[in-house]
Amino acid sequence: MAINEPSDNLPLAEVLRAANGLVTAGLIDDWALGGALAAIYYVEPFTTYDADIFFIPKDKGLTAGIPTIYAHLQAQGWRVEREHLLVRGFPVQFLAASGLTEEAVREAEQIEYEGVAAKIFRAEHIVAIAASVGRAKDKARIEQLLQQADLDQSRLENILQRHNLKLPQP
Image 1 (cartoon, helix red, strand yellow):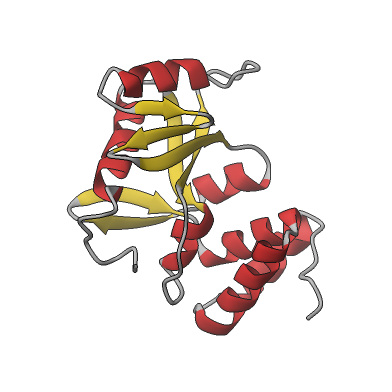
Image 2 (cartoon, rainbow, N blue to C red):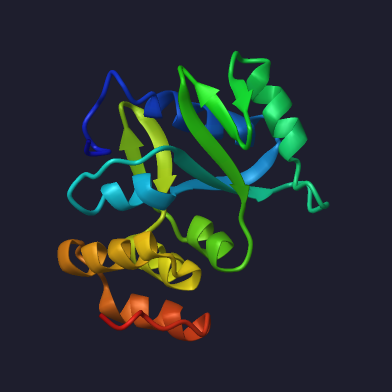
């Protein structure tokens, strides 16, 4: 399913609205959609299990404010299941950003989805983050983005160089 196409199954607008609400409530400084759903914005759709919301915490402590974020969303009807919050049964993971992911949040692209203002990782950051993680599915994602996304090569090379990363060899 393409992220830029509305869906009855994927409550993405609710997820994005909730993330904006966390900023409004003063619980986080900023956020952006990352992970597989962000990649789908740039390439042909593929199946993904959850949404990853990367946030810049207001609370710089050990928990990065996660308990407060979870309590806030649970009060709005979200359920907790292991490391995910569920909205209408769809799992969402809130991840405190640091280093490369914090840069990705700060430089994220502004989009609108079903009338909701949102931010999404740029394709170049998705590639760099996948290179830093290095799992088989990340290597496949890099390949797909290199083939299908309209990447800014100089931006990508700059990010990789600043974070001392290399793309995997095919």
